[in-house]
Image 1 (cartoon, rainbow, N blue to C red):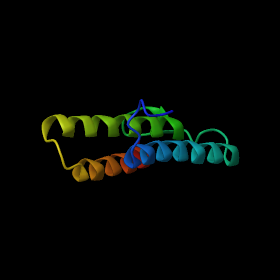
Image 2 (cartoon, rainbow, N blue to C red):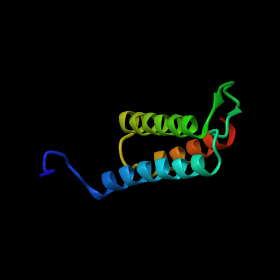
Image 3 (cartoon, rainbow, N blue to C red):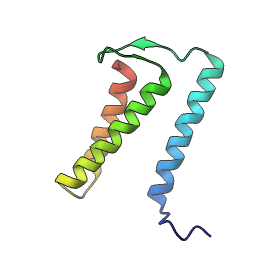
Image 4 (tube, rainbow, N blue to C red):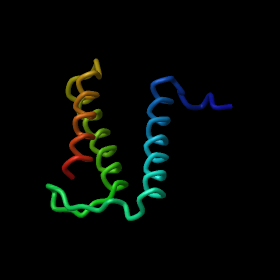
Length: 92
């Protein structure tokens, strides 16, 4: 039924990770309403959801740029993406 899309374990893990992050954000919002707004180094007032979106968007750009400029393997952009995500939730 789902043979039209190339579902692999890495693809499934990416989607599971994104939906898990959204689930954690929902639980945090129920426990501590308001989105934990703060003003970061970019000068934007962001909530937890905004920071997740910025980190996911930056991660996709990191991987696309790496694939376009360097190619495989993808361990280095994975490390860069994790560092970008930590930076987004810490400083943005």
